[in-house]
Image 1 (cartoon, one colour):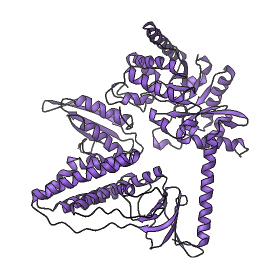
Image 2: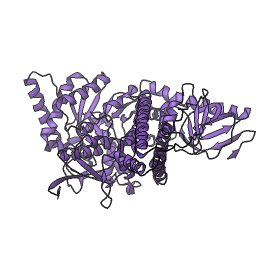
Image 3: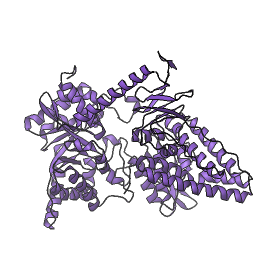
Image 4: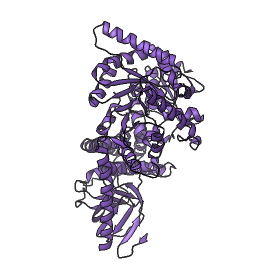
Length: 539
Length: 101
């Protein structure tokens, strides 16, 4: 606890969701209802089943009203209520004479304690979901009225912890904030608060009652019954926060990123079509990498040509005239696909993966190439091949692609051979880059670093060694960029480095003028380029 | 890989868990939902010394507490056991994609 200079008390917790709220301080307390009087075991079993059915229905309604992430969070509760392995011991307790509410809550309490004891923060956070479920079923079993507390608009709500379904029952349309005595930044309610933009601070410890509160989600601070001076300081912090966000948004909306007078193209990486729903995606100069492996994991096996064609076409339509680079299946390595990738390889990262695997499996590869050739007539499509070591692999893929296009055209189906390029991720390819007849290059810095530094990137023990800024990695990036500039071929980088503000100065100095980043990093990377372009120390 | 038990063959498979948070709520819900689509009895475990648990029970799958990078072993028997194991492996290998078509 920090004693503020004047009057009001200030408490620090942990940030769960940033933002600012100023309003009345409202405490929520869990209501205790009387235990029920037990009937016969069969009455009790029926009462529990009815309460479970009623709870499922309530949760389903909440989920339907909330949609999106909230609905997914509530799915866990619904799944528990449909889990016989979970319910059987409770029903067994009832058949031995326990009242339904006692049997239910003792089992749930046991599970909650178990989750709380876990060393993993994610599991600890799930205990509030279980408490939510326990209380909902208990309220129904004990015949309590559903109490929907009246909460004034814009209030700072204080509770021990807040279950996700209570969060959804509160009307947040007038703003407000959440101050929890316990809770966790990784809890479901924290995800909901972030999604709604509601400031939330957790782990505040014991708090007195108060009439008014200031909640600052950025510095994880709660101030109770603040003085005029505290309010003035709070409003100043709120305004600074608003301005900094507005400036990143304003830079994002500018037509292009400029570094020392040169245009830097910023494209986005997508894993699946839904990634285009991100609000910032529209500001990208195109799609620098569309991964296609998700198509391979559909529950009904390998995707057919039509499914693939519709997927690629949807992305091209979204992009309109902007370029879209689609990468052919990059399975193997750390991305095994049952029935496709080889089993039992001693070292899958050095095994039959990427283009190597596709060339070995023309049955699967040709279906993808047919779908891509048909999509190529619909927009600005480029196709790139992953994990290429030598030029003959690129030529083999080009020949196969050419056959596929000829077959389609022969059958009267409109199709085109798109521009073809390679991923630069095998050091040998980077060092002999001029040998490739490639229309463009895209540097896969994650694999390039892994192979250069001889570090399995999925091995956490090597984190300190896997440094993408190692001179050897930068050397090969610079060589590739130089070759591109000399030959007049575009070179981009689509690995994690491009989304990391600390790597941007080095990448620009290596000569890269195209970066492909995650949509969520677009605003920050554009702001970073703008900042270092304006004479920042590292620009 | 085939084992035999009471003349009924088990289909088995292994896959590494890539999910950053391990087998937590959303992956567990997705896995059990998919498992319930099959008639086969399906069991999983997260290490060679652990007990096999029912892959259709979300409570059990959560309680397994499989951390990131652990190897999930799957075994199934019944008519559609092979398809079940393949589907579960794909789901875990693809890191529990949203909206499976």
